[in-house]
Image 1 (spheres, rainbow, N blue to C red):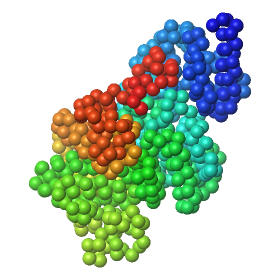
Image 2: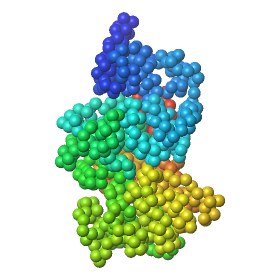
Image 3: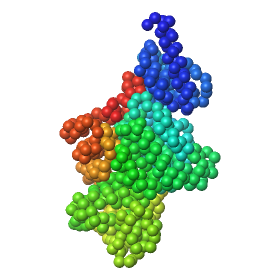
Image 4: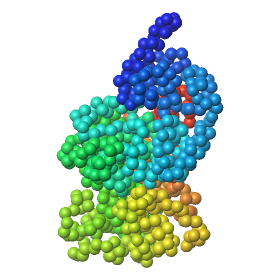
Amino acid sequence: MPVTLRSCFLLLVVILVCLARWSTFLHFLPPLSSALPALCTVGAVQIEAACSLCDPHLASSSALCPLFLVAGPIIFDPFINQDTGFSYERRDELGLRGLLPPAKQSLNTQVLRALYQLRSKATPLEKHVYLASLRQTNTRLYYATILAQKEEILPLIYTPTVGEACQKFSHIYRRPEGLSISLEDKGKIASIVDNWPVPAGSPRIAVITDGSRILGLGDLGWNGQGISIGKLSLYVAGAGIHPRATLPIVVDLGTNNKKMLEDPLYLGLRRERASTEEYVEFMDEVMEALHTKYPNLIIQFEDFTSENAFRFLERYQDRYPMFNDDIQGTGSVILAGFTNAARIASKESGRPLHDHRILMAGAGSAAVGVGKQLMSFFTRQGLTEDEARERIWITDSKGMVTKDRGDRLPEHKVFFARDDNSGHQFKELADIIDYVKPTAILGLSTVKGTFDETVIRKMGSLNQRPIIFPLSNPTDNSECTFEEAVQFTEGRVLFAAGSPFPEIEASASPTGKKMIPGQGNNFLVFPGIGLCAALCKAGRVTTEMITESALALSDALNDEERAEGRLYPNTERIREISRDIAVRCIQMANKQGVARDGGYTASMDQEQLRDWVQAGVESFEYEEVDGLNGGVGSACTL
């Protein structure tokens, strides 16, 4: 191309980039700029680098510096930035020489620096904020750091630290991530979805929350966005889904949290929550807009109130590829842990598996979801559905849930309400234990200390190996600690919690052996469910697929983990676990006819499917071509 013509063409491209970016608010990539990489390559500089997502200078200034139209956006786009990882050749090609320190460093060395900086922070919240900053700066380094130290970092990006982060999310906010769709946007939601920048294909997994019931912390309004972001970080770390294939969403319908409404830094709508009718109408528009734009998008509902969680699950599960993690994900992971615990308890006591009796402290969406999943444990032992339901009791703040208690029960509680209590009503948990004589108690009450010494000792007196699962998050809401459960059962407890607890060393253990607490965290299951649905393009996420995920998780324990008395596999193996869950769920999706991949996965045997799923996950190594072209790296199947 002649120099003059080449110069004119370059000028035209730069003008187009400037116009496109000028129309962008807070560095969001418009459709025009996302189309530019296909136009040309000028020298060695990819035009896409001039169209990156994340130039903070353009968010705060109207000045368009040429530096930030070429080299700057590469450095400031977290998806393509490699920082000191760029080779000298690439620095020359991209105009980066002199803009970076002289050292060329490997990803491993960068991880060491990130860990050094992380460990210099004093509190878990400060560490959470640092990790968020790293995610917004260098995405691959962020996930490589997580994968290098999963046990240390997972509690910082999700439970228990994410609870405090959400409470203070408007205070620690630095830059936008994901979609924020408010009631003020009603009637315009399709155009808002169109605003989402997708330079390398459509998102495949979204997490959506209304912030109304964040963990055990209640209504946090818009601040719930921290949950969507955190959950999707786990999808990426746990299943290898590419970060660009994820979409965090918060729907803001107001908040009834007076503290939020009075906080001058609060970033959400300053109004009370919408009425049910307005709420449903709004959510219908949201779901239709998302599905129209991205028909293969898997939508995970997260932390809605119990009433709305069940309402929207029932309303949408047969219309869209979606699931509710609080109801179905929690049910799956607890079914897996309970299955392993029941096998151990029955082996030692001789009690038949179908004879277990489960008492659940809590009657919200998670509790009822868990109960319904646990019914499948009993039906697999040969019981009918009615017989399976009779093996489960639930309690709420008023005591044991019965049909003749005298109060009006919410619809979701009616399913497990007892009618065989002969008129007896029980308020205190200890009295309910005396009446039910459970082999297992599961805590989903969000009330710290619900399983006190009296309750734990009663369980120990009734059972050779009592099953005690305090599942409420975060740690401050847990019904009891691992140490308490071990102490008051003389080390006989089969334990799993929703949040992490420290191990008990052999020297302090009543058994003389190191005791490892189980953590029934949904992180063990939902990445695999999402990976399955994304890979086979599932039109629905069925109950049978959720149950299959639980069975796959239960089977995931290896010999070493069983010998240690674990109820769940080590999270260090989360990629392997997620792959195996995805394989089993894809097979179930094909069996039920909900896979929409044109029969591609149905033609594979299990080994072929494992290899195919493994090949489709992101490794988070720097890639000279795909990384700079904004491609999805090895996650091409997504």
